[in-house]
Length: 457
Image (cartoon, rainbow, N blue to C red; front, side, top):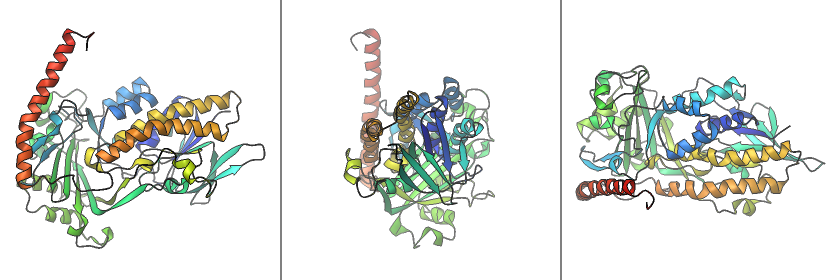
């Protein structure tokens, strides 16, 4: 017998952690409210070093190599940073050129999720169509404890450790007493995706073949990116893409538009008769290039399949939050209930770090679960102190990293830190035109010096 883990949520982080547990022969079950064919997560995600840490911790080398083959071939600069433009399509700051910015690549969320689900589905460790209701801590007479997990269909299951990977509207976060997830009421967020055959690539700005494009204008944010996987061999730059040497059947575009709530003449998202028309109308005074980007694919049969949501973020939890909330009920603050990804550190999409940090969490949480499993296999009955120490080690690693990115992404304020319209945008573009080449040169000189005197670097 060993440790038994239940994960609520088969999103990216939940599925990745499940692979890690499976690869270390730890008993687990993943419960997911959606059905297997759901495409709710089919938008683009850009992943860097943080995600790679999670992959390497939870997957085999062969699995990691297979995933890397699914990444987009547009990432010439391999930067997770966008190029920032004005609403009249004037370049302001090309963050993708900064040498110190996080590197990585992009992949369709649904493609990544499907790849991560394959091994755990094959091992019959996933239960779809199961909506979490609540959990109980059951104390047995012999000093043992179980977490009893209840679902809305009346069924239940038991485990030693419950992992809440149920997203930014996490029910587990609320029940365990964290309650640090915040709904952003200043903006609503609209998302669209579509197919990307060659004729559409040729209509888009060439800059999108190098990096995503972001536009900040009067409190709104437009983010636009492409997913262009290879057709069996590595693409070499933009020329191969515009020549059609990529997998057109899998390629897609993605955009997200965050609109200030006062600019939307509806009381609720369900009142909006046509979400795409709302977005197109909102940018009607923007540059033709940006309007083309938004209207691309609007006549497709699935063009109305747009996702709209209220944004969520999180406030930082104190390191002692579990002891502070313990006592109201046995369930609050209990060390057998852990939180993962958006379920504890939801963040705004401004810096593209939500998924990266969630996947990094898996690299921090897996060693603690392996350690607990070894204790159980050695015949030890896990005490609350054993669980508390392991959970504390995980949170001590995760909190500074993840909540720092929450802050960098805007905290719980959806507006950009400063406007990039008008004169200020012009000044920023001029300064960036000088500062970025200097930073690139300094980085190259530093690399050259270190290559000459590696022992002194």
